[in-house]
Image (tube, each protein chain N blue to C red):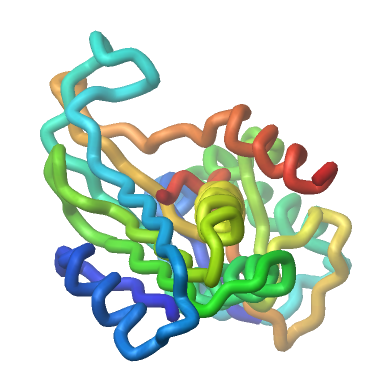
Length: 154
Length: 83
């Protein structure tokens, strides 16, 4: 399931709902992405006061569905959930939830990473940070594209 | 065709979307980018470094060599940064 929304989500309630009544699920793996209070990769970077997430409605859902389908083809998954927020977010707020449920843990762990890695490079979202030095668009990381390459060789 | 702009491309062009008849002589994404750049002002600024611009046609990521037709929805945006 895929949801794009401005409002926050309750991870506990989402996972409870995801596994409800499905006795074949033996494990759930979840990843939650949060808004950091600093810019860049180092904690001593510029401090962030807010972040605004823009997306391409329609294409976002299409790309996430494609990633979800690829994950289901690669692993034996019983349920998958992707929730991504858009709009203005403050540091420490939740941005994204990816949860995968399978009979055994390896499929759940690996597929959650796979979905996040592809979401980072394929799903049309853009972050704009507002910090002490003004507003700026976050630049894509080379390391994110490199992670995709590692999946192609597995 | 319908053209959409996102993130800093939207800011530089001061445009979120526009409807445009297929410009004369344009047959690929690269050709359309050259045409838009030739408008000058914010458009030449937005397309100054096309290596920084990503493209989707009908909501699928494509290369700049991708062919275009008049019924296409074309979107220009920077490399994505979600998650």
